[in-house]
Amino acid sequence: MFLQAALAIGVTVSVCLCAEAFAQNIYTCVDAKGRTLTADRQIAECMDRTQTEWTRSGAVRRQVGPSLTAKERAAQDAKDKLAADLRAREADEKRRDRALLLRYPGPAAHRQERAAALAQIDVVIKAASKRTDELTAQRKGILNEFEFYAKDPSKAPAPLKRLREENDSGLAAQGKFMGDRQEDKNRVNQRFDQELIKLQRLWSPTTAATARDFSRYQNTSKTMP
Image (cartoon, rainbow, N blue to C red; front, top):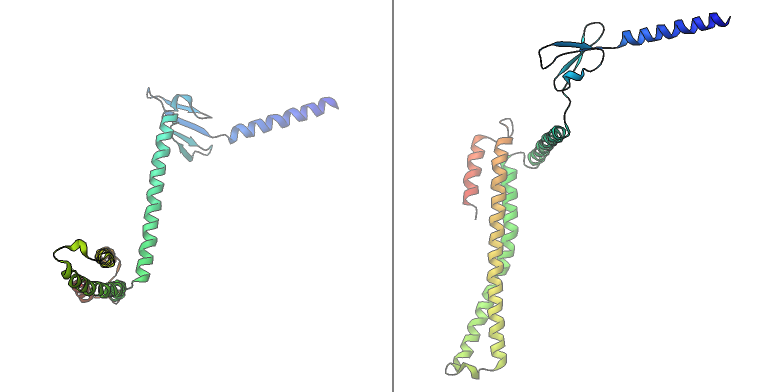
């Protein structure tokens, strides 16, 4: 009885081992000497080159690339990261393009928003210009009073001197403020000009924008202050 059980176990183990061996794939490669090598596992002599893994049925399962050194792996990882970053930037650029196209479906929408942005700055400049006119008129009165002390300005009263200093500071500040707002207008125009270049590529002939719209928009954009 014991002998029969042992024989049964032996047969079972042998069958399993044979099935496992039969299930294993085959690796082939051509080594540095030009020899074609075959093995049931990856071939040590071909670790620096591509190996082909075959199934037992004779079909190619995969190509196994050469093993990389630590330095080569680091270089490959860096290359992969650059490629991934490039793909991410391209995807982000496409998202921004879609958002831009949704915001400005045609030249008219872009032109109107440019005009609105510039108009907001013009309101501020107009108020600053009015204040500058007030300070200029005030300065004229101050200088008229200083004419009484033309021979010796040091005798002018301290309040009058202080008023002139405040007026000078105010005019200087207004001049800088208005200059800054003009720079704001320049930046707005520059931004819309850059957007327009991209939008002309994104706008398709099927939209409401026609070639005449493009031409008219370009001409009006150039004449905007």
